[in-house]
Length: 608
Image 1 (cartoon, helix red, strand yellow):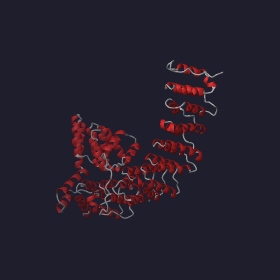
Image 2 (cartoon, helix red, strand yellow):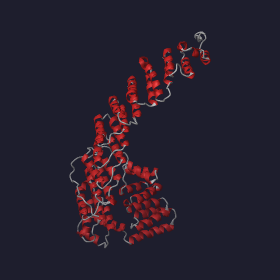
Image 3 (cartoon, helix red, strand yellow):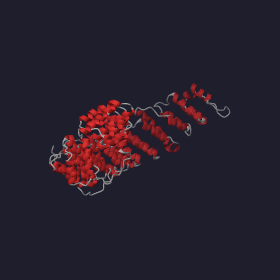
Image 4 (cartoon, one colour):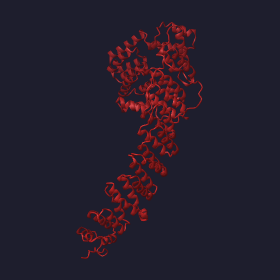
């Protein structure tokens, strides 16, 4: 089908686009690991996408070569390619798989694949014949050995495409191109068909100049008229930095006669461009490929990979980012959260999180609106890095878009600023958050704020903040928030400076909010420094009546005496009302826990 649009590749590069992060593992190692661990098609696809790996013809061949001694994984990989990307399997891939099956004694599967391969017009290579023949001979499989030899002899007699390809390539590569080379190729008396010419061009990949000479000559000689397959094969051979001008010419030429850039061509050449820092050229090619028919358009995975290469380049070119977005969304494709998440992850990897809003602005032009989760992710990334101006710009952008930052994202802003140590900005964001009509995450954000104040030794400021928010905004903190604040107010130094009274005042507020009192920190305080008068105040604060349950009273006394604070316990007892002082359980506790008769006073019974 005829493609629309014009080719925009520039021969001269106007900027450097060196990737800022290099791959730690080779693509084939990553692929082998994935197929060794996983078997489900969806799981494999997701893992490949998250690893930025696109299976090409060359990569498939490299993987199979490394799996020669691991037939189970090789079979799983080969089958997956057959179903997901059959166009990536050439005669070389089939022969490599035959070598694996035959070399590992999987005879039935070997012959089954031979039948499939023959139907596709591929022949058996001499390399496979020799390798598998040795295995058959070693295992005493005489009938299979005879069958193998007959198969190879038949291929040779039938002038299989592989055999002819080898002969043509030897002629072309042996000498400089000229009349003699042309004559020798003609003298082969071969009928040149599309698949054969494609195979020859691809086999001459190591000498692109000679591949191009053959490609031109075969068409001009009248032996064959180049078609979409052969044009794409030629484009794949020339799609390298050294041959950019010729690659441009071939693509322009093929499109002018109605041929498209095939998906295999796009994947292979785009990958090569990105690896050799030709990011602009990769975007040029993407625009061309997206103008083709649906079967040849780059996949969402290809698009995501290109965006990630753009944002991690040495210089982030927003024009290239915008061009790629427009090419992708022009035909109705939609941006997704998963795509943005992947791109933002790459942006963070090169410490460019401050550019998140710039990317969003471009994506908005394509109709994308970030979900609540994506808003939270961006808000958290900016505030954690202390990027206040950029975070404000993000909030303003969302408001200007008619989609105010939701309270979950606002909570992420608060948490991020707390983590970065900017409590003033965290408080500003929190105040703005509780001003919303429905702030469902306010209690979560407030707990992060209280914890941050406590970690900065500003516990009493946290108390004032809680009191103000409860009174002014009717905030209902979480039970865990109260626990954090009470625990920190009762640390030794803070408790002496008024922290005890403040912790005590939180008990009735907790009760009003439906939470049980949190008394463990009080027990710890009374076991070390708490005075009898403070303990009495605690007991009174535990209930709306004069005193709480007897179990709490006994626990306070027991805590003091276990810590050898018998004198304070006696003082507290003397301050208690008669029904406490005369309680049998209390008297029994004092009698059983006295450490030394001579040093501990007996409890004073209340006067009648």
